[in-house]
Amino acid sequence: MARKYSIAHLTWLPWTPAEMIYNTHLLGYDYVSLRTISQGLPGEVNHDISNGGELFKLTEQALKDTGMRINDIELAKIDENTTEIKKYEPHLEAAAKLGVKNVITNIWTPDKAFIRKSSASCAIWRRSMACP
Image (cartoon, rainbow, N blue to C red; front, side, top):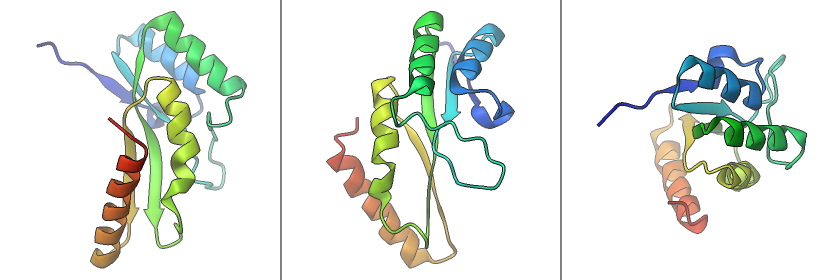
């Protein structure tokens, strides 16, 4: 079985998702990982496709043009300031329309009890979203 390769959007975050897809296709990658969930950091490039606007349409077209697939989207960050993980649902729904089945999450805390509780919440959320 041949190995498949994906490249992270953080390799060159200024590219839009569509630019990332076209360029990584030319470089020979099989998949692309896209950072479509903004962290709200100062100076961060926001590639939010969840509103179904032009960025989503361009991303969808790039996938059709190249035959590339998206391996995952990122980053569903969970920390003490995350009061509801369902806030990520619009991002997952938009990604699912593009054939995405994976999301990268991480839980930022040294509190092991919070990690266990958040992990359990993610598992329940995953089942409720009927994720594969």
